Length: 257
Image 1 (cartoon, helix red, strand yellow):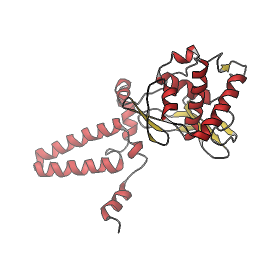
Image 2 (cartoon, rainbow, N blue to C red):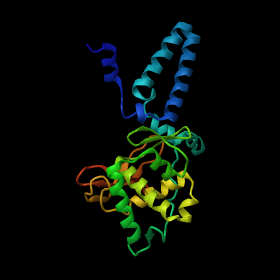
Image 3 (tube, rainbow, N blue to C red):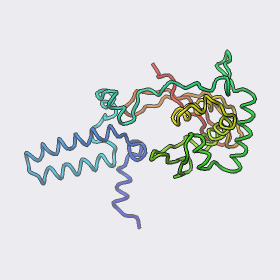
Image 4 (cartoon, rainbow, N blue to C red):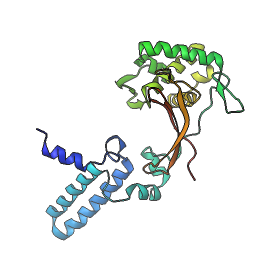
C-alpha cells in the first residue's frame, strides 16, 4: 500500500518548479524570506511558533518550488545579472562559435552548408557509432580530455562536472563529428577547450537535415517561445526527427520583442 504522506506530497508537488526544474536563485530568495518571517513570528509568539512557521514554509518551498507567488518575475527583475550568473542563470548564451569554417562548413548566400567531404565522413562515422554505441572514450575524445565517466544514457561526469546532452541523437552526432575532426588533425579543433568544443558541435548539428539516430528527416527551423525562470523569454530554435520524434537541436535564438 502506498504511503499516504507520499501521496499527499505528489499532489502538492509542482514538477515545473521542482526536481530538475528547480531554480536555485528562486529557492535561495524564498528560503531567506521564510527565515525572516519565522524570525518575526519568533519575536511575537516565541521559538516554538517561529519553528512551526519555518518548517511549514520550507515544506512549501520543497514541494511547490517557491513560497512567494510571482517569484520568477521578481527574481529576474530585482536580482542583478552578476548574481544570477553565479547560479548559472545567464541572460544570454554566448554568441555561436565559428571555428570550423572552411573545415566542416562553407558560407553560402543561405547562411552556410556542410562541406561534402566532411558531411560524408560524418555520416560514415555516425553509422559506425550507431552500431557500436557511444562510449566513455568517444566522449573523452569529443571534449579533448583523458577520461569521462558515464552516469546515464546521455550524461557524463568530467572533472567532477556533469555534462548532459539534449538527446541520444545529439550525443551521437557530436561524438561522430568530433571523431572525424580528431582524425583529420584539424588545428582549429585541437585548439578548442571542452566548452568551446561543445558549442561548436552544437552549431554543426544545425546544418544536418537527417536524424543521426534513425536517418529520418528533420523538421528543422521551428521555433518556440520559452518562458524561463529568472531570465527573459527566449526564442528557441529546434530540429526534431519526423520519424522517431527525437530532438537534435534546441538552441536559443533572438529574444521575442
